[in-house]
Structure formats: structure tokens, C-alpha cells
Image (cartoon, rainbow, N blue to C red; front, side):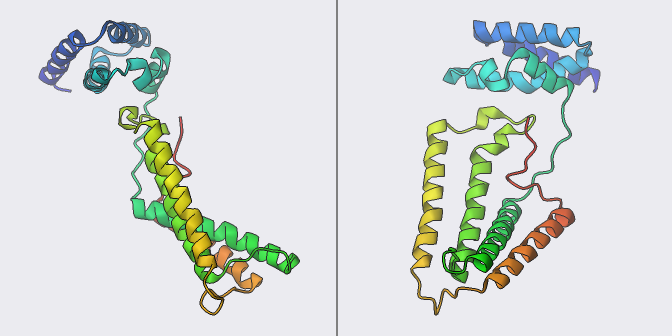
Length: 230
């Protein structure tokens, strides 16, 4: 880093620290000591502080503390010292497709096996219900990622996480839509919503799993249920 840029970071950090509440000032003071004990250079410390101070100054206006935003001092120090490689963001449509194929695979194989060994009592969905369930379910799993799981990634900006009540309302609405989709499509006549032979369902499931594996390798898809966690 250029010396002039570093001096600018240090100057900005000082000005931002003056705007902190007493509790957040203490957090930054303890973090500095922790980073110093870890033998970080002045440049590394300035960069680390410059990444969090603007967020902290902004979010404290809403009553949020440094600990709520960045974890304990030791946790934040650990995150700074072991900053993970940046994970390439997967497009939402690819996450949805990955989830859809996963559901098709699991339910296809499961219903196929159950249909073979318990034809009279097994619950086998018609083709429209089967595909709709997988497509809407794939979207529901993506919604879970969008509003919850992405904020569990290493280095994620938790300050952008929605309020818990909002998350719960969105998720409940999504699951209700998923269940409603299954219920409504199940009412369609079998002449349209054709019930497939269990063997065909199992084959569809196996093909879906194979296609999902191929696409993950080809496009390096990080599924919404397999995002690296802390």
C-alpha cells in the first residue's frame, strides 16, 4: 500500500473512532491490543480497522454494538488473522437450479423405492406435483440462504442481516406457498397430473442427482445449503 494511502486510512480511522460510543470505543481499544499482540503490522491493523469502523459508526446509530456486529474481540481477531479466500458468488438462478435438482433427486429415488415395495400405501405424486414441488422447494431453499445462511459465511457483513421477525415472516410465507403448491396440484386429475411408475421416478431422481453433480463441477456452483460456515 502506498504510504499516502496508509496515512489516509490512519487519519480516517482516528476521526471515526471519535464518533464511537464509550462501549464501542472500548471494543476497538481491546481489538487494537489484540492485533498488536498478534504481531500485525501497522498497515495490516489500519486496513483491518478501516474495514469495520465505517460500519460500526453507521450501525451504532440504531443501537447496535461492535460485539453484535463483529462478535467478541477474540473472534474478530481470529477472523482478521485467518481471513478466508473470497468465495465466488453463485448466481441465484444457479442456486435455485441446484436446489431443484437436489429435491428431484432425493424425492424421486425415495418415492420410487417406496412405490416398488409398498405400492398400495406409498404416497406417489403426479408428474406436475412432483416437478412443481421441486421447483418451488428449490426457491424456498434459496430464500433461506438469502435471508439467513449467507450471513453465516466467514467474513459476512452481519450488519446487513434483516430483522429476525422479518426473516420469520418471509420463511413462513415461503413454506406456506410450498405446501399450497403441493396441495393444489395434487387435486389435478390424473389424466393431466400423471402418476409415474416407481421405476421411472427412481430413474428421474438418479438422473437429477447426476446432472446436479455435473453442473456443480462444470460451473463451480456453491449451493445455498452448502455455503461455507464459520
